[in-house]
Every structure is written in structure tokens, then in C-alpha cells.
Image 1 (cartoon, rainbow, N blue to C red):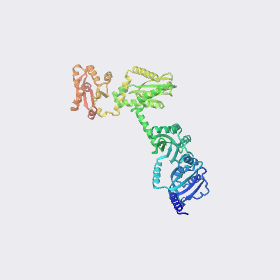
Image 2: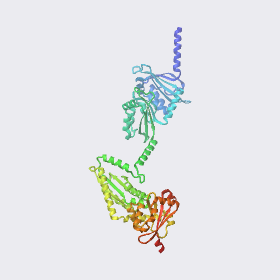
Image 3: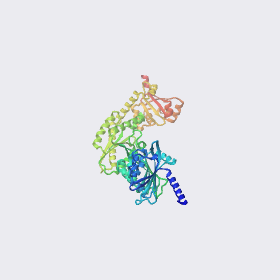
Image 4: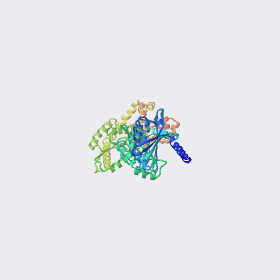
Length: 577
């Protein structure tokens, strides 16, 4: 051998040793038949009972079956046991494929980088390539560790090429490894995944539409922002909410659309979000006092019902509460609120499956597609009986119709029937029942000792009237009110100032009327009470009775609310007594 040939041979040997030295195992492989021959194999990579395996694809599968590959990396490695997958990747122009994984050894484990390297002319006619295994470098190990961390968050991480309709697995759940090991196209994976029952039936159409590959190609050319889908994925015997994100890779171009696919479990987070949204919707659509649906929801539902032409039957119950205004003025707004809540509870109890709304201060509406007019009439009788036990009464009307009648006509008929019922109620009762109920409520207040502290401090054995008067709002609530003064208040629309003016005009002798000028100017009265704790007036009525009016400052209540205590005493009766 000449000197030149010797030098050339030495250079070749140096290059061969340099190139192969970093590899633990190298095999020459026929990609079509799987035939292989190891040209290098370090002892640490030696496997027992592998000598009889004639296909490289079976060789790789046996490594996984023997648990030489850690389970979290087995799915990604196992796809190289699929001849069709490898052939498609290489014969379509791929020159190098790389996959890192964690491998068991006699002394523990090591990180291995597996590579498939194909020469320029590799094809079905010349299907030879190199399969090689080497110990991973520090950078590769760091990257795999980072991906492992991501894997604790995500069910699945894939690198997808939309242009070529291919994928590479980074992290795949065990239940989906079957798709990775036998499929080459991401479009096939998505299709089979949806059809396999792993996607909840109600979410299947949206899943298939989202993963339609032509749509994604066009979408990402128009806008490279993240595309996301929430759907329910089978997990054991149940379905859980997950989120799929498609994120453009740093390698992405419109001619080579590479994405990263992430799927993570969001079940608890999603359900909590849905509950928050429902609460917000309820808060927006519910009446704050009764928690029935409010006017806003009522209007929304009417619009929806009016658009639905094929409605078999709609029945409307329209309710108005009798005596709310008087209740508020005589006994205070808390008592009025109690009345409204009682009516709401009765409607909710007896129409549990229907839509019930509070559409105004004392007006309620119930809409039903399930109940006939006759059924609602029967239930209304029970509702009235229930409310009567608490001394509450309602006026009500019912309207009913089919698709031939508009929703608004049905509700209008119910409202007209309610107005007629209310008119009849007041004709029959002439206010007597209302005042009787008021007196019963007053007795109840006293028996429960509400406001009793003030009552016991200032009331003598005989009195003509006792009222708590709010000077700033011109309203009153009373401990005792005579029948004639109640009539004055009703004529004055329950303005205390105007009621007193009627009282002075009709029942006080004219020579004593000017004594009331000081107290009927509420602004000046409030100033005087700030200086003195009590203001008194003595006067004579047209019937000859001598009266005393005492007006007291109620300390904290006066300062905060402008509320005073007015006590009318019949001095003639007191003297005789």
C-alpha cells in the first residue's frame, strides 16, 4: 500500500470513528422489509432474547413490551414500530427523525436519543437507512425534562404539520397510543378519535368542525392567533371537560404550517366558571326581593315566545297583590316586603315547573306551556286559600290560547281579567276587610312588643291616636289609628301632612287652628325638636272634646331618619276617668 493510500485509509478510519464513536448502537435497516444488521452495539445496550428477531420494527416493539422504555415515553417510541409511519416520513422527504426517551439499564436508567438517518436517494426502490441510538446530551435532557413538566399539565402534546397532514408525539395518554402507533395523518387521528366514542356525543359535531384540516389551514393563514376548543373527553367511564389549544410553532410559515397541539383537563375549572356565569345570569335575571324572574327576563322570554310560531298552548296567570300600598304606609315597608315574599313563595310552591316573574311592585305573571286554563284555575284557588291564612289577598286573571293567538294577546287577556277581579274585590269589601287586617296586624305588633319601648314610656291609659311620623318623607306608621283618621289618610293618598290638614279643617275648632301652624311646618318642627325634646299643643275639637298633642324626638331614630312620635290624648276622657 502506497503512502497516499495509507493516509487516505487513516483519514477514513478517523472519520468513521469520530462519526460512530458517540453512538451506543447502530443498525443498517431496510425500511420496507424491516431487515436489519447491527454495525455497532455497546454492551450497555445489549438485550437478551433479541437475537431471533428479524424485523427492526418488531425489535422496537419488544423493547416497549419488555418495559425497557419508561411508560411515559413508550407511546412516542412505539410509533417507530409501525413500518407505514416510518416509510411515510422518510419517503416523503424526511432525512432525519429524532426521538428522545428514558431507558432502563442494569444500573438504573439513562436518557437515549434515537435517530433515523436516510441518505439522499432513500426511496421504495432503495429503502436503506440507518437507525442509531446514542446517550442524550445535556441540552436534550434539559429539553425532555421541560417537556415532562409540561406533560404534568397536558393530556397530550403533539407537533403537527398541517401542510403535510402529519404529526409527531411529544406526550400522549396511554389510551391514545393506539392512534400514534398505527396512523400517519393527523386528520385520520382526529377523525377516528371522534368516532371512537372518546368525544362526548353532544360535542362531536363541534369537535369535527374544529379539527377539519382545510379549515385550519385557511384559518391560520388568515390569523395566526391560538385556536381553542372545549369539549368533553372520555376518562375511564366518565367524561371530563378538556381544552384543546392549537399554537403556531416558531417554525411556522404559510408554506409549512407547523403547530403545537396541547390538550389539558379543565373540568373543575370549567364547572366553576359555568356556576359563576349562572350566578351572574341569575343575579341579572332575578328579582332581588323574591328571587323570582324579573321584568328584564320577562321581556326577553316574551320576545322568544313571540318568535316561536308552533306553540301548542300557552296559559298566563296575571296576579296583583291587594293592599300593598296601604301595608307599606300603615305598617312599614318591611311588612309590605313580607307580603310580596309570601305571594312569591305561594306561586313558586304551586307552580314549581313554570316560569314565574315579578314584573312590577305588586304584579306577578306565571307563564306555562304545560298547564291548561282549567288546571291553573284549580291551582289559583289553592293559592288564594294559602295566602288567606296570612290575611293576604290577591286579584288574578287567566288567559290562554294556541298558536292562533299571539303571546301578547294571551297576556293582555289575563291582565284584563285581573283588573276586573280587582274592581270586584274593592266593590265587595269597600275597604272594610283591609282595615280589619290592618288592626289585626297592629295587635300582632304590640303582642310581639315591636316598638313597645316607646309605647310604654309615653302612652297614658287613654289616647286618641299614636303615630311614628317621618318628617323628611311625610310618611307614618302607627301604634293606634282611629277609623276617621284612616279615612283622612286614604283621601290624602297617605300623606301625613295632608291627612292632618283635613283633620284640622274638619274636626278642630277654627279658633285653635293657628296653633298647628308651628307643627305643620315640618322643617321648622325638626329644628325646634333639636332644641327641645318635646313640643305640645292643647286644642278643642268641634265636638267639645279637649285634646293634647305631644310630639317627641326619638333620639337616634330622629337624627338618622327624621322620625318623631305624635301622641293625641283626649284630656276630657282622662279627667273623667
